[in-house]
Length: 362
Image (cartoon, rainbow, N blue to C red; front, side, top):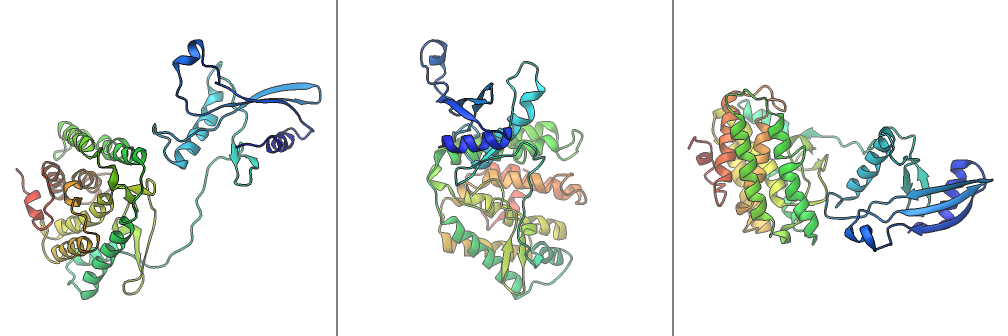
């Protein structure tokens, strides 16, 4: 709720003069005629009529409300206002964008009109990226007890955070849409692949999208699975101190999603690094992969996980096989990753104990 007193203070700061507010009312309340055809809207605009000295002003204050059409998250609504402010004044005959405001918890309205960009400031965390452990093993290093303990520690962490559930069907459907259609999702990845690749033709990439969309429809009724997630739980976003102490970085795409997102993101990296070492999931990565899965399922007991993880694996495989994201790996590794994605998406249940069956052409 925006209080008239806060409106008045904001307008006086902007005009640097006393303001007399004459009228405040919501627009769009009429339901006769053409207005009755559109009963759904993205907000309730507020008309404010006021005077500064002898000059009269009429301005509309817009606030985007939460809905299931790409406005599920606070960040979506901030982005919508930002986009409107940046574009309204660039189109002839469009109603002008006058200011962009932040509505603080205390009710104060603060102008952001001269803001060019937003920056995020975080605390610094020391440690070594978990990827360094996997690179050591990829390059011939021997498996150490600490390697196994760390895989189990990561499994325990995910099992714990995934037990926090959230009831929000709109957020569940949004997460599934993002998996397929987001710029960082499957379609964003397939669009980024060059046209003339020997291991990924346009028809093959289109088939990934079509298979993933079938999975989206299959998963849509499973809204009860909405869980707390990290969202980008790969080895470069995990920092280990000495021993088992670790920190995580760069949580992505919102607080709530599918547990399979995090599990696939980490475990496909055991496959990825093993492919670079041997061409298959083989020791020492095979043990890390198996230990992670066994420990995770012993703690979380998610009996459906292996029946929903398939499209998430496909997404992560497209990232790892990408010539833009990983330009130095061999075409053979890329082929096997994409074969893995295709065969996993064609399976009813992911068999984590027999991964190499998904790496052979079929």
